[in-house]
Structures are given as C-alpha cells and as structure tokens.
Amino acid sequence: MSHPSYPRLASTPSSPLVRSVGTLLTSVVFVGSALAAPAGDAAYGSKSYDDYEEASVCAECHVDIARQHEQAMMSQCFVHEWDEIEYFELALPHAEKVEKVAGVKAGCNGCHAPLAFLAGDIPPSRPEAGTRANEGTTCDLCHSVTGFEGDIPYNFNWISEPGETKQGPRPNRVSEYHGIAYNEFLSTAEFCGTCHNEKDPWGLWVKATHLEWKEGPYAAAGVTCQKCHMAASEGQSVDGGETLPDVRNHLFNGAHDNGKLIGSVEVRIHPEERSVKAGKTAKLAAVVLNAKAGHMIPTGSAEERVVWLEVEAKDSAGKVWHLPVDPKGFEGEEYTIGSDLLAYQDLGDIQGLADFKGVRRDGPVPVGDRIYRLPYFDPEGRMTIAQWNTAAFGTDYRLPPLEARTETFTWELPGDVATGPLEVTAKVYYSRLVSSVAQHLGVPEEEYAPVEIAAHETMLTVM
Image (tube, rainbow, N blue to C red):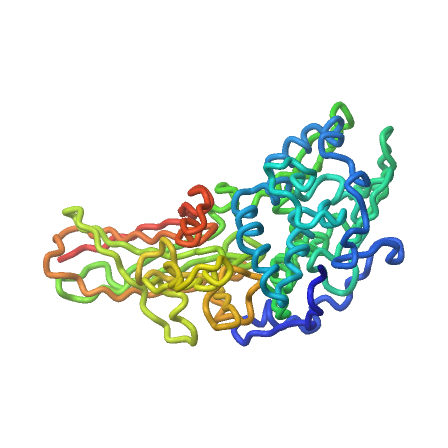
C-alpha cells in the first residue's frame, strides 16, 4: 500500500522555485514526542476510527468554528464530487492496473480521508455509504497532530497522536472536556505543507504550494498560510466562553471560494497610441499581476487548473474582435497559448477506452489566448490531469506571488471597423478544472465554470 521510495527533490530549468529546493527547508525542526507515532505511509492502519472524536462532538462546544468547518473544503475533501470521481474512477482503477502508481490507492486518502487511511479502511466506501471517511480532514485529526517527520512537510508526513489531550495554538487554555497542549506547530506553514506539498511516484513535486510560499515574499514577511486562509477576528472559540480578539476562522477559503479568487489577480491594459486608422496596426500591452496569493497562481493541483487572459476590442457600432496574444518565443510556449489541440489521452488508458483520441487540451480557452500554467506530462509525454501519473513538467508559466507578466497584442484593424471610440477589454478567467475533462467525466458544471477574476478597459479612437 505504500508509495514507492521517492527521490529527494526534482528539478525543472523553468522553475527554480519549486523544482530545485536545495537549501530550502534545512532548519525545520520536528515538533512532537520524539517520533512516538508513525508518519506518512508508515501510519497506514496504525489507528482506528474510534481513536478520533466525530466532528459533531466537537461542535457541541465549538459552535461557530464547527459551522465554518462543515462548509469548508477541509470537511468535504472526500465527498466533494470531483474528488470522488478523481479517486474512484481514475486514481483507484489506475492504481490497481499499474504497479508504479499503486501507492495512490491508499495515499490519496492520507489527506482526503485521513481517518480511513489511519484505520486501514482502504479503499474507503464511496460517500453514499456514509462511513467516517466522509469526515475528510476532520477536527480531531488536525488537533491531534504534534509535528511532522523529516526535513520537508509533504505526502501527509504529519504525526497524529489522538487522545484526551488536544493540540492547540494558544497557550494557557483549559477545557472541562479535554486536555489542551499548546503546540506552536499548528500556527506554522509547515503544518499546511504536510498535505499541500506532494511528490508523485516519479519524485516530482506535483503539489508544492508550501514550497512556493517558502521561497516567496510572504514567507520573508512572516505572512503564513493561516493569516490568509484562516483570518483572525474577534470571537469565541467556545460557545459562551471568553471573547478573544484573534480567533482563527475555519473556512479555509481558497480556489473554491469565488470571493477569494476575485481580485487575486489584477490586469491593466493600455495602447501604444491612442489614435489609429482602419487598416493600420494597433499595439497594446496588458500587465497581469498575482496581487494577493502567497504562492503561484494556479497552485496545488495545477494540472487541473486553467487561468487565462482574454482580450477583445469593440468598435462604436458594437462589433467585437478577439485579439490573440503575441508569442514571446520561449521554449514550451505552445502549451501557454489556447488551441484546439487534443490532450489527456491517458484518460483512455486509465478508463480502458480503446482508440481514445483525448479531449480539447485547453477547455474553455479561446484559441490565441494566453494561459498561465505548468503542464504535467505522463510517461509517454502527453499532457495529463492525473498528477500521480506525472513523469515530467513543461515550462512553468504561472504567476508567482507579487510578480507581473506583460503580454502584448498586435492588431491590424480591419477595413470595416467603425470610426470613433474603440473599447479594448482585458479579462482574466479561472477555471478549477479543464472543462473538456470535466464534461468527459460527468463533473458538475459549477466545478469547471469559468470565474472572471480580473478585468480592465482602455479606449482608442479610430480615425
């Protein structure tokens, strides 16, 4: 059931941040009781469901926190429709066919259904069965974690020590129901990294959100994951208890929260000249900035995400033209410009579909639009959304934290463009899953519907 032995770190020339971590985490210290409990693959089957309180028990006292948690992806990471489809219809059958990826049969659950993993209930029953696997990353799991094993947090190498004493981030607290151990580890980004960093069977960092943060400006400024995804406000951690100025919310809002997505990226567009004649060439530049996220955009399961820039021009008569981006000429750029090409042919291998030609590589992205992505390639060199089946990466053209990319557009105005004002609009869209893959697998539309996360307009005059 265990993962294959992973090489230390992988590297890709295009992304020194994630792929070459060298001295990145050499000083992380284990927080816990001298490795008293197993971690990672070694923890498989080491506990029982009964070792952990149900979330409903925690909710009896921690009312507000429980209400937040139950609507967060943390509590839904096993029952969420895409996660269910990805595991039961792709990862699990693939693991049973191919020895190289056999570890994902148990390993996916180390983060998505950790109680099932610890109990050895693998594969868990599907959500409709109503087992405790459905609790996802539940309260008592996180508040039993005493630290992690090794130098780098990844692949669920947290150490869980359940019992009457719960781990908490606030010192000098007392409960009538259970003991409380102050544990500073719960306030660190490394805590999050135990599930938000992942190496696959080829030793590649197919998830590296914590590593991206670690080498970026937010880490240098002391802004941890919790400060953005568990924002603190005045409240009560216990119903009827002391009002505190800085209770962490447990919404963990991220890519599945449109409010979090909107404004995470900014875009501004401007023309080289404000006046242009029909039949002549207009040149425009759009600046796209990762303005809010302390990690790459997109991050996490980046093989699934699609972020793109779309530019359109509308003349005074209301006619609209789509403007394709100017190529920059870097290696692998073809994967960052929207096309009608097919990809994801390994879906056919996994699902046993004979002569499967693939589905549209870029989903909803119009041909010619700029895409911000890190392509994942399977062992045969084909783009894949199966992160566990990733043998290589393409060029990393995502948006790093607080960094901007400038895209140019060169447009020869057609002879029939109307004179007068010409409005040019730049929009950035985010799709949580490639729509063509989602439609092939029957994933609900809300999982892949594009979200407009940034927009800006500029004006020209057609002489």
